[in-house]
Length: 133
Image (tube, rainbow, N blue to C red; front, side):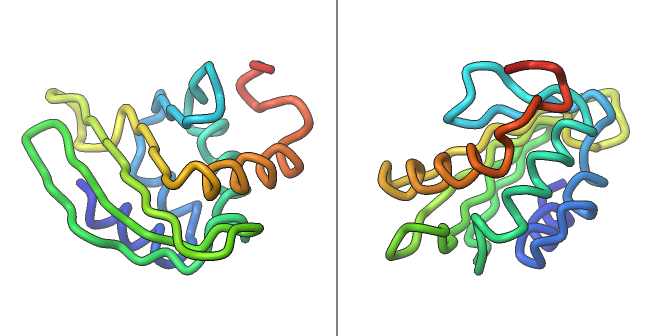
């Protein structure tokens, strides 16, 4: 489940990353109180984040279970000196086609997350594709 996503993230290929996800995927990110729902909203978010704010992504360890997986990574963040460390928690539907149904993203340190949030706010300042503010 995580290897295709890991390759897509390392290549900053948002379209390939979204291909690993179910149509009704739910994406949770630290700086939004509500999740992004569905592939279009997820594609919009990943396209914006992988187009510069999060770059030079290096994939670390992955741990996979039957219907969940963890992927650790590090990356440069625009506006932050130093590397940030991240964790993706992915879940798939047990009876599904193996695509990711839920993805939660964590990033540290706080200064790196704040720099990413500021840049993403500029990039996504308009209405979100899922209709949430």
